[in-house]
Image (cartoon, rainbow over all chains, first blue to last red; front, side, top):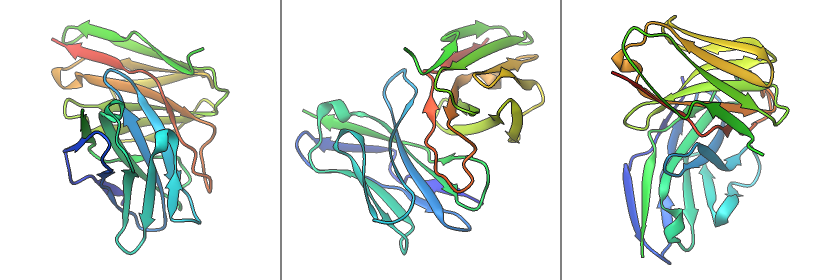
Length: 115
Length: 116
């Protein structure tokens, strides 16, 4: 079984401060991990993914995420938050062993960057 | 050019009606998906098609029937609509089925379905 947990429904951060959006996952094998962002009334946009190799993955708009196998986590980070980063963020996982590209999404974390 | 498009953007209808949502992608992708996002923003896959063939059919009532006339289109037909069907439905596509490759998915803008 595959699942993703995003323990925080809401994260507030001041503009210019570092931000972290948390994600933990559960798969029977090794994971592929993804972060997506959803702006109001829009579809999801891909930010970054972890496949293999370097545990620190860099993505769009200055975001990065760190894969931690021992803690089964894939937290999203950004050194300096912008007001325009305010959106809904989804973590997703896929078990490498499955043939289908079936992503399991977390429940989302709403990020609000305060000017 | 819009990569993944859906029509209509909004759909308001009464219980018991039958409705369809259309999806088209111009990315040349082989695989397309339908997701349902409920009022709490929880996103769950419904169907996955690869080259017009059904690959995934999650626990979705058989009132929902996907149709893929070609690999650029995946339509969703819903019979006998119920109040609980109210949600935002997203279409997505990816280059392939994956296997050992982690393809990201490209999402459409969503169709907000309201059943009254």
